[in-house]
Length: 230
Image (cartoon, rainbow, N blue to C red; front, side, top):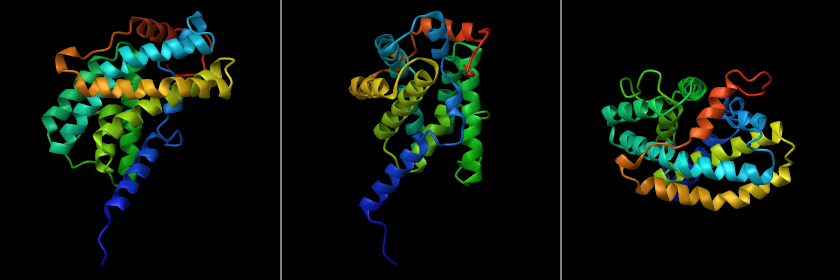
């Protein structure tokens, strides 16, 4: 029988990444705004310009110093079959979710992705996955299992975050899809910079610095009228 060519393997990995970051993936990511809806309500974000500033700040001080380096560490841990390191990264990420809503988003998306992978018979071996593992932990496993490279996994995660945040803005702000695409053009290079930074940081340099997002997320818990769960 013919063996699988390197090109076919690369193509399948790319398709696996596209599947993982697709808005159609049935894990409910569309239901969470990560505090952005409160930022709209509070008037901190009100138009294309202020939204771009908010997203750039969250990307630099949040994803680049927290989710993305943790994803890189988790990818390596899955690659080496290091259950202890996987558990440590999972706990570290949970400790850095500063509000109940942010913690709930990570745990519920993780649970949803775990159920989906279970239905596809793609869960890791017993004992490798921490109890109640978070979304980033499951994302890292899925990317590694699909043959996606570490760097591409980080880029895909960052892209999915940006796409979801812009979808939130299009639903909750008077922001058209053309404006959203202008922000994509503006922030695409920043995604690459964030990934580069995440791969260079030492462990003692990690941790988000997003007091505004934490305040917005906490205030969202009692916001009277809302479309999203965070």
